[in-house]
Amino acid sequence: MPNEKEGSSAAMNRTDVKRKSDRELIVTRTFDAPVHIVFEAWSKPELFKLWWVPKSAGMSLVSCDMDIRTGGTYRLVFSHPAFDQPMAFFGTYKEVTPHKRLVWTNEESDQGAVTTVTFEEKAGKTLVTLHELYPTEAALDEALAGSAEGLPEQFAQLDELLAERS
Amino acid sequence: MVHYQARLDTTFAALSDVTRRGVLEQLGGSDASITDLAQRFHMTLTGMKKHVSILEQAGLVTTEKVGRTRTCKLGLRRLEEEAAWIERHRQLWSARFDALDELVEHLKRKEKADAKRKRR
Image (tube, rainbow over all chains, first blue to last red; front, side, top):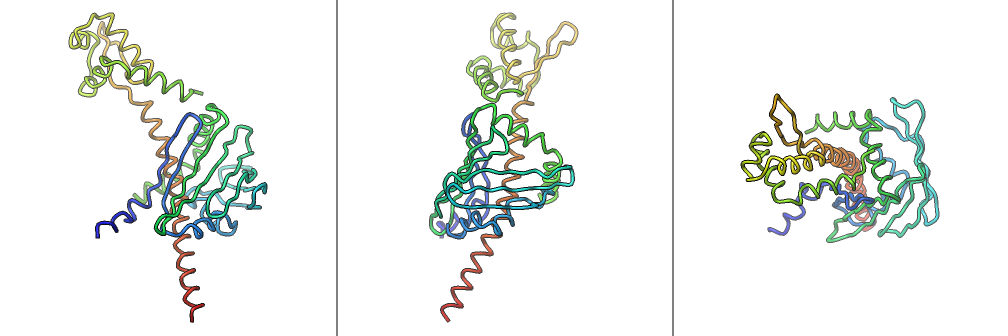
């Protein structure tokens, strides 16, 4: 049946990253599961920490505190062999609407983005759209530069692993 | 810190002219001197120099003076840098989401198994 082709894993497993405007980044991906399962993996700390830190990045999660409700806060602490000090990422959940939307701030920097994740179920699959809105264009540029150049070790490892796999 | 928006503005301004797009296409085939380009596009040397300098400012073309000739070639570095950045992010998110994919698959199977057990 031609319709079944649409669900082929090659098309489904694609992670798309786009710069939507000078202040916004968008990452999308479809998961082959109903929304309540995908949402659970984002909203339960014991599940979240199983996937959020790519093993290939060589980082490990030292602690993961998530008080996942509107107005609640989170704090993730990472360590990496290349860094002397662990790094903390923290912020507040602006909105937690089960099976629909998660919005959180990134407060480790005063130029941190607001991250919005939306979940849309269609025919048993879930489209996840992650949207990062930076306060200023300069802040996004900074983040890009930081992520691209500031963590060379991390990305070098990731690149290496991906090169091996491909 | 180069500003992305300003950079895009310069790029798009450079690309907004039909002659300059023609020059890029030409340079995509082979490098050329400003004199060559001026002749091909039926322009004065001064006119072509202006176009090339706008393309150069946008990082789309690089020029090099050898003797009395200025040779132009495509300068794709900037576009490549941006593409490389997007690609790095795609890899990070891919790795992250591949792990999530596995987990979700596992949870789905578990849920089905649990449902079966309950029905018994």
